[in-house]
Length: 252
Image 1 (spheres, rainbow, N blue to C red):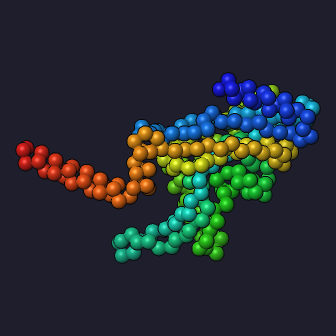
Image 2: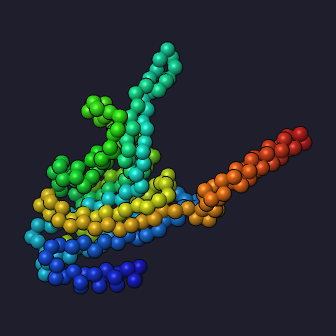
Image 3: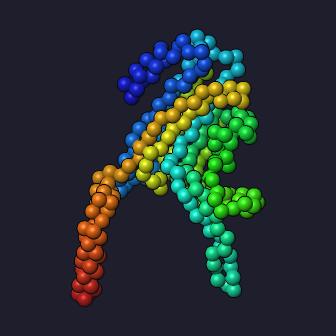
């Protein structure tokens, strides 16, 4: 953490002569390792705002941070009850739904930017560009999109914490965002936006890697690199466990 603070100070010195405000962001963990006991993580996104000539504006600026996971193609299905049986009815496919999305802001988004700006920068789960590929009716699209957001919200994969970003002396900012235990491995991005008078005047990105570690990593690599041996081993373990269960049952 001391080295990161030193790098932050060095970047501040280099950016002092810039014509536009600049962001110097960082994140508490650049790599998150998933072990068998992984129950989630709490990431700290922090940094500094550098103003031209070191002069802060009379009106305080706002900060919005967004943590986003790899995009996925998702098929949503709607169930209906027919003759007492639940069956699949309508469906919709979203081509670019983020596997994880978390956002925090210094004030409610509606007080920081207008609807158009929020949609451009995807500031909020209701502003995500999910790229539907199978629907034309806007009412039906909104219904399926609301269903997707609700499912991921209940799973802890879509998170909003508006009004929780702390800004100290108009220069230093910090925010905490939870990383769900259900996240997938891959490359994540931590985006920071500086907003003044309803306009995004600066943005910066930090990369975060989520990967499996330990036995979980070994199993994932084995399944990918040696699928045949992995399959044989899985069958052998299943047979051995079945035999052991049968032997124990006969002795009882």
